Length: 318
Image 1: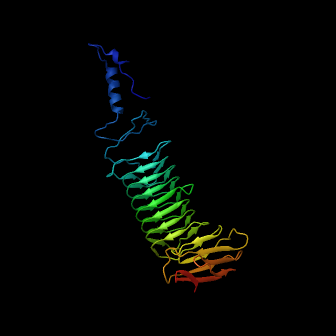
Image 2: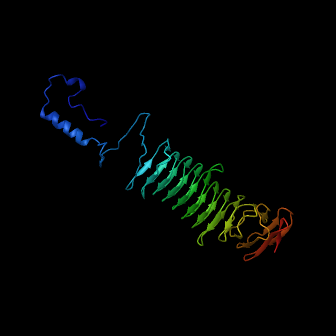
Image 3: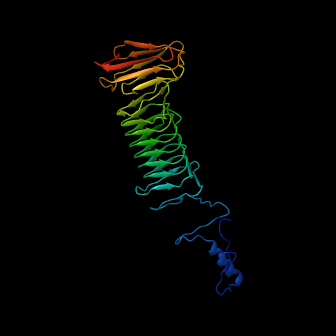
C-alpha cells in the first residue's frame, strides 16, 4: 500500500467534538510504529520494495550512501551523478552498481562489480573490488585499482583515461584506446584491441602477458620493467621505437604469404635494442626499418630470432 489509510476514513471526518475511540488510538499507534524515524535512524525490513516517483528524486546532502550485505544498486535508463567534491562513495564488498551512465565527482570505492552501460567519469580515484565493464568512455582523474576483470568499450571511440597510477590485478581486455598518465601495472593478462599509451612505467608481472591485436600500437613513453610478450593474430603492423624491448610472436599470422613488421624511429632511443622471437613457423615474418626502407631480416621457423638496434636515426640488424 502506498500510504497508511486515514484512521477516520478521510480528513473531513474529524469534526470538532469527534470522540476518538480505542480502535482509532490503536491504529494511530500502529501507524507511527511502522513509520521511518528520520531523526534517530534505525533498521526496517519492508515486505515489498519502496518506490519513489515524481521528478524530484532523492538528494543526499554531504552524507555517505552505503550498500551493505549483498545489495545491488541498479539504475534503469537513467544514470548516477554526484555533485559533492568532498564525499567518498563506498559500496561494500560483494555489492554491485549497474547504471546507464555514471559521474562521481570524488572517490568511488566499489566492493563488487561496476557495470556502466554508457560513459563513466570519476573525479579523483577509483577502487573496484569486482569486475568492471564500461560500454563508453571512462575517465578517472586519480588512482585506479581494479581487482576483477576489466572490459572497456565496444568501438574505437570508447576510451579509458587514467590520470595517475593504474593497477589491474586480474585479466584485462580493452576494446578501445587506453591512456595512463603514470605507472600501469598488470598482474595478469592484458589484451589491447585499441591503442595504448603509457606515460610512466609499464610493469608487466611475471605471470602477465600483453596481447597485441592487428595494427594498434602500444606506446610506452617511460620505462619497461619487464619483457613483454606481444601476441599478434592479425595483419601487418607498424611498431614505434618505444614499444616492447622483447617481442615474441606466438600466434599464426592471418596473411597469405608473409607477416610484415615495420619499426619506426618514433620515440626510439639511440643505442636501444629489441629482440624479436618467432614461436610459430607457419608463415615467415619480414622485418623492415621504416625510415630507410631497408630489409632487416626474416623469421621463417620456430625458434628463429633477430636483434635490431637503433642508431643514426634508423634501425639496424645487430
